[in-house]
Image: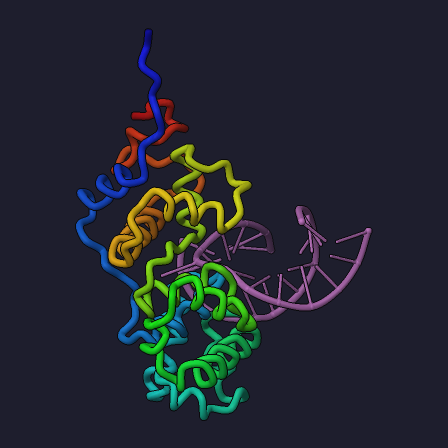
Length: 224
DNA sequence: GGCCAGGACACCA
DNA sequence: TGGTGTCATGGC
């Protein structure tokens, strides 16, 4: 009887990425507050454009809660232009600042003392913060163990044959969180690895020969 | 000139 | 409840 070949386990996928890339430990931000703003600005936007908007804020010394909270919306909007949908994002950043002010006295660090699911629920109640943005803030700014599911995550899991593409955000998230230890450092690095691979891999083809996951990609017909 | 990029929301059937 | 349109810039 032939042995049944199974798709790779999620820890095995992580080990391969880790061997390939090393530790990623990552969110490109100089402070936890900047991480929060970046998480909002990157919605449906290439990170290179987010960096331009963050740079515009940084040059004007506006990348802090106190400075941004005082800034009128009319002055914030043009600074966010490079990140696209700047009218929308200015409203969303303002809504987050109001939330941070009212709930945590403007201190991102205070969010770290919340239970992960409690913080997630609170963030989701803020206008303009959906599941991915909430989890990005909780994981990368507050250091709480919630796995971030983004377009890269879905794309790579799809190519591995681990998801069909119809799953909800929470279903994909629970795929990770039910199979991995609740470790913020692990979730941080794992998601960072997926993003790095996602940026490297071609969007329209199966993972290519250079990919560390090539031998486990079900669509190539050679699953481990 | 069109498509896509580390989404979320409003609106409608 | 699920599907669709909208937001809008910059790179390729």
